[in-house]
Length: 380
Image (cartoon, rainbow, N blue to C red; front, top):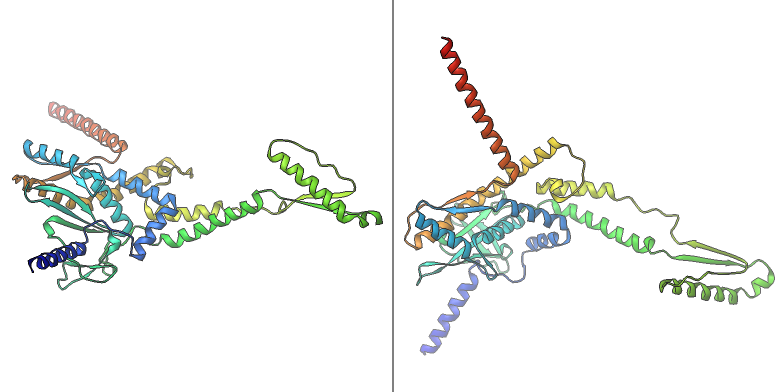
């Protein structure tokens, strides 16, 4: 009897563990989320934009007040396990931001080793497995399985985190960065597919050989002569394929034309560029970062870089509370009451140069003002 009770208890624990959303997910059951994954796989420029955003955003360090706490944070940030294949807090930030941008929401949680009083690892969940709705408490979300609609048991808020991107009254669960892009990407894929089919038809040169008999004797043996011409032409084409050149010699009126030579390929440069402009504008990446040689002035490039910087600062504001919670938990488990802070590095070297130039100009202005005050004082 005890054995059956232990077995039933183990099954209940296993079922409860499966209901927790902070686990490795299998196949995508969320139609929208799976579609966004497919979209990133089919349109390389979208995936490139996501990679640039993530790499430019996630450059930070967790800091504390006391040196002992700082050493603990540094070691934890470099060695903490993330999922089954990653390590370091930076890796977690990359995965978390990638999920946030793609699906409009990101879930995560901490795995605690109670015996050693430390964080065993950080988990990032698959948002396509979970739907978010309003619960009884209007200020707290309710998580349900996307496949069954069953309410999920979530970890305590002290060891879990949930972030949304661009939430609204109608979409409190967040909105993907790719909203509105699928319609444009569908048209773009149709254009690329048509270009490929046209190259199969027109780019692969094919010939039409026409024999026109002139006399009655030629007409009587037209079938035999056409067969001989076809054989000689086929032999010449096969010889060219292996690097041997053979001339085609025929008697009579024989006409050779390239099939489709009078047709022209449709110019797709303008519609493709218009679609790419819409997609890149939605993702907020300047074209020159992606290597697109579109005409742009120096001032326009500078303004685009400033806009990108503001976008990245917004993503950093979303990540800061999550990273502080992780660092604070690591310190508290080890008995430190220090406050954890997130120090973000400047986004690029242009920012460093601009800050240095600003400090130089401020210093020069202060020297000029000091000398001016001395001159005014001496003059009086």
